[in-house]
Image (cartoon, rainbow, N blue to C red):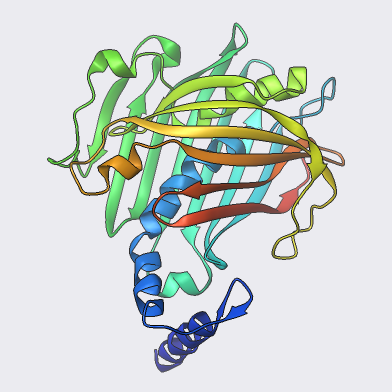
Length: 305
């Protein structure tokens, strides 16, 4: 316990001395540090929105056989801190997929917030689109135990079977007609992945729903360029760049941040061909209106078995 406190104190002094590689110290540092800690839930949500679905269904080179089992590990960073680790195991073939993800707090940030959630979804491929079935998520996040079970019924209907805690009273109710044809967060990017795998381009758009919030996503092809080198990532060199934006369109809170959260959140994703597996998203980053730039990098890939 004493050792943990010493590490926290030491980390705070490191934080106020080093930011973006520059020496600094002023009266706003403590405020910035506290803001970062209190917005870890936003970092998590943002990571989920841009990343979780990529973990669930990675894209493969055109014409390449799809491995049935792959394990991926991503590290998520904010303010130069490693805050979240995401692990994913998936099984898929040309007709269906099943995905399991594990999100947990990591690095020094784990001294200040606790995150440990497991999610699972199964789905099918039909008419060049994904159709999720049952989505489940359970674990500890944002200060409490959370559990969600949503049946997307493979595109036929959407039924919330369980949601604890329930929607907050100060959060907008989303009409049922507005969530029609939406998909879950883990499956959300699968449509984009399919297009990248089959066409080599990123043009796509869709809506996804997490039980209380609705988001729209659209993307377009950038260019082949060099992956930015960050935190000694093992994946470097040229990659396909995809640009995208996420916008919360439903389930906004009645708060002073409402206007910020309703804005489009821009992001970029880099896909690189990994030997023996094919194209994978090896890095993503985006600018969040409340916490700044969030970056995730692919740290480890367990080859298919």
